[in-house]
Length: 346
Length: 180
Ligand code: SF4
Ligand code: SF4
Image (cartoon, rainbow over all chains, first blue to last red; front, side, top):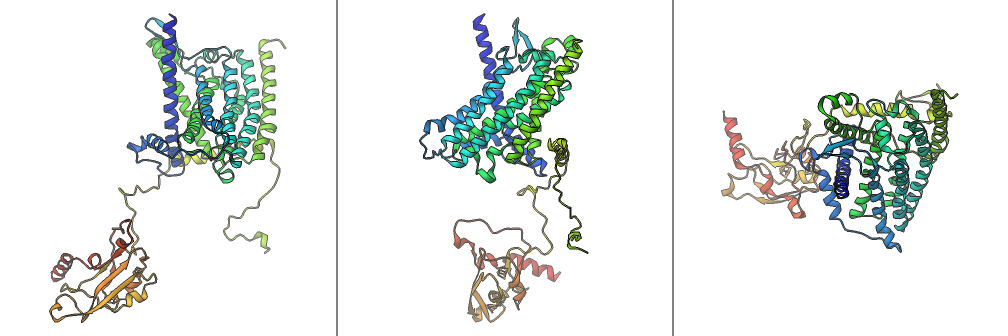
């Protein structure tokens, strides 16, 4: 029995890893395509049919580039930086419920690498560790622009983490659980959290943009001021790792958005499907629904990127501290009052 | 009229520095408006021309590769007067004149001809002034879509008579058409 679980989880983790990588790869293509479409262009269309092999070509190019190491005393940290970025982007996927459960070979397979009951804290913790990759990389580059970029990234992450945490508190108060699986189960059918926590969702969304270092919060990579930001000194696949990590974390953060607020793998009419076609079919459709939601969020990330310009640094800080945090606190208070009212205790 | 109210483009807008309200400073409305603008572009026609497969429509005054013309008897028209070289703003043309031998009457129309005639395609700006200057209507810029081929050797960009003079079969065709 134990062996079976280890094998099952092992396979599952490998599959999730592969899917994340595939997504990150094709996000790079999607980004370029969507950028082009929004600007009335066509985008890369030469490698393979309609540019489908472009990510492979990009990867090949990065691999064949010269690996350059700046004259830095922190050679070890320089190498570790991109690795940390990449691994923190990937390990969040461990607690995400990708689907309900499948009944195969007479066993119930839960589609989640691990269902820990403090999953929310885990996600939150891992997201904040993400800044270390950038910080260490920027520091070890021995380049003032990289360092400045790293400072910006870390102060930005710290500021937005507060608002993010506060917006999650309201959600946790409402659902009464920290486990992502329970949260997903509670959003059965069309009972999605977004309808109860629209303000919380908005705050969380804005903070996700900041945490993943995407436009309009990509001050850390501000080319006009900081050359390339923290990865100025990086080349070849180390640079590729940073870029890849950004896309992987975009995928993960889209997933978290979908799971927390947009009903995870739930879709309207799932009971009807389960009754008529069996639970397995319904749950497999659920997986696809979750991925559709993820893709929609990824598109949204890109759509935003090609719509609004980068914030100025003081605007960024003002938005974080003076707008989002008060809003999040108000949201908590209102949520609390509403919960008490609906329980009839007031 | 005071200078502040003049607007040559008709699109002048007064910049106001008023304080944003709380709702405005959340930027949500503005961002939503922006998103609607960009999403519209997702469905507009793409303006890209897929180059090797599609080519851009040429303007009616398009000037391509030069050609040294032959007359209706197939003789080269150029008399190596050098006016084209003189008029060329890019100094792209060089030539060497030679006297026509009696047995070359069928090759060259005038008594003097260009034994060497070279245009440096790296210098040429395709202005067409050589064509205008020529008193013998010997040099023309054609509508040819063939661009100067890329190369790694500078010498390859100096086009001699072998590349510039109108091919014989083309001259024969022209004469036949004129006869009809
Ligand atoms: S087209 Fe203009 S630049 Fe070119 S050879 Fe003629 S005169 Fe010179
Ligand atoms: S091409 Fe015309 S202008 Fe130039 S040398 Fe010949 S005859 Fe003279």
